[in-house]
Image (cartoon, rainbow, N blue to C red; front, side, top):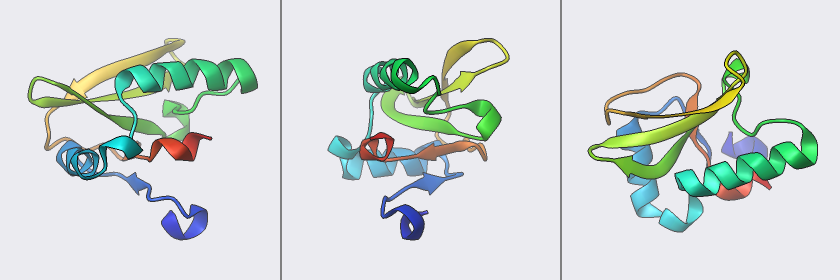
Length: 104
């Protein structure tokens, strides 16, 4: 993905790998609060969601819940933004770690 966009995007990585990226460059990644604000702004401006499960797009966030890492995505089936926390060894093909600047 980096070759295509110039951005350091990591797809299908474990929560632990994402956490290591966040710790290395904390200013490059969104917290849960950042993500909720960005999701609302993008939707109000464009009518699309920045992270949509139907488009195989979810976002690990640089927010922890105990020993777990938080992720979020829009779930069109439920019509809501899903937020969850998973163990650090979890990985889903639709989850990635994207720098916050990739949403601008």
